Length: 380
View 1: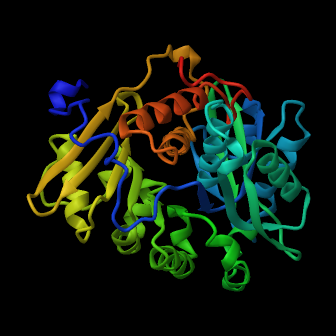
View 2 (view 1 turned 180 degrees about the vertical axis):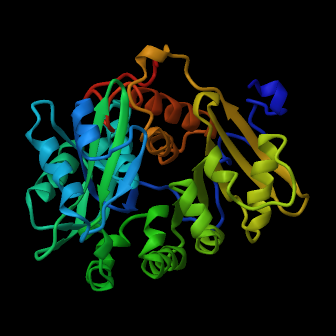
């Protein structure tokens, strides 16, 4: 899909110095905190026999509740006994924070110690907790984690068979981030100038994340909302819109964006974007970021006074061979991480998007949200 067909232009309609400006936000931004589900992904290659034995489905996803049948829970122990098992931090916002920190680590033009990247969430008192904390520390993400001593850390079993995957997710401690922990650590939380809210939290923590939003807005700080998944937009539309009205940046995939109800047919991406803006209350300089797989990414601002886009850009995806793609999961999380690594440095939006595309390109060439320690973003 070309820029011409979309009537999108790669020329900025606003100056580099003004594109990141927002009259409601105190600039510059040096610290970002993400709040979401800290999860450990337990990844291993599996046999066809294992898929059959547990009635699993390639490409499928099972949400295992804490009291589900023992047969499904056995999947985790089976994965962990396999020689190819690997433990990788997972969860949408946790992926974003790690990619954000990784991108900053690879920029030798900045003083990395000036930037504070943190992850807020809750974990259990177990070995999975240690794996999460060690992985965050290793990449330079500050863990602000409530440790629930009588609980267990959330986990996702990922079975890989001939490049196809299946998922068995069990949310445990991450569902129980407490208001008391937020209040007790509010000073530390509000040291950050930007907040990322994971849409998945709207299933069980809407009131808590709304309160966090309000804290940041009252202190003239940036609020970022991720849509997370199409089913979240479907079943939590009212909550998505309420938080979207508060957000300065809204991030999602094209599939998620199309879940916003409309009486009109979406003939072009512009129709999709305008529909979202019109579902929300007017907010000056609100930024919409939409990823569209192999079609790249879009960045849009809307002028409610003129009912026109005040800024719109399309950045194509990098061209890579199909055989180089190992795992598309986490690509959107990585895009946001790469985007924000440039955004907080004050880069223009085009360069922010390009950095996001580069980060996502790396992630999809690995299984899980993993990346080489050293990477030259300028040349890729």
